[in-house]
Amino acid sequence: ALILQAERIAPVRNRRAPSHYEVLLGAPSSGAGRLPEQLDLAAIATSNAALAHRVDRWCMKNAFRWIAQHQKETPSAGRWFLNLSQASFADPELAQFIAAAAHEAQAPAQHIGLEIEEQALASGFVQINELVRKLAPQGFQFTLDGFGRGISSFAYLKSLDVTNVKIDHTALAGDAGDDVGETLLRSLHQINKVLGRATIIQSVSSPELLKRLASASVDYAQGPAVAAPILLDKIRRRA
Image 1 (cartoon, rainbow, N blue to C red):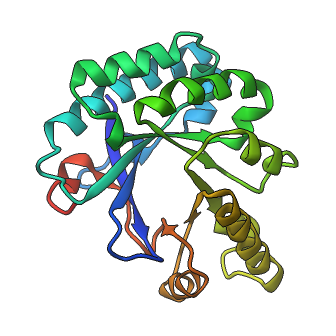
Image 2: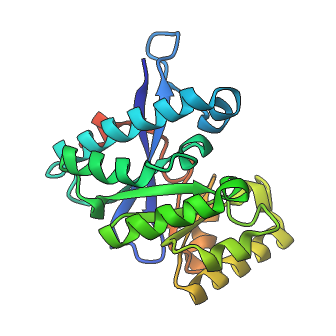
């Protein structure tokens, strides 16, 4: 059995802005009362692309259905962002499937976002660019995830019509942060601002880091210092 969880993406620069949520895939834990174990779609896709493709479709259908059913109970939620594995981006019918699944579930595109791992762009840029071109005009939004890790980051950022750019704080600045890493994060954020993209800093581990991000006018933060992933049914009581 699979379980859908969500992790809050909290506004930092403008606290009145709506929170977004990243939908995460989990599996029931073996111990009673323990949190579900998060599943790594990228790892699944590496070992079994066909399975990852089926899991992606299951996640989208069930997430869209939940979003539609709980719109009135989550009025302060902005968008619900789903991760897709690299296996799905190779599907030429992906855009059609996403639009049809959202329509069938009656989940508004204005509440749905998709996260694109930068690593997936290396082999699937053409397909992903076409996906964005088809779905963005319908109201879907896109986040470029893992920005700054690859040598082609800036080329992707300029070419893709994404709304948000997610940067992993731990990957660039370490757990405690360092001067070079922090400076790099600020520089990447400034580039996003120039290009009209919102910046999401991921893996935010402390209240002190949250304060530094606020002073740098970063748009959103995500991580242990913001909120831990919880089951979707519990989200509706908080959103």
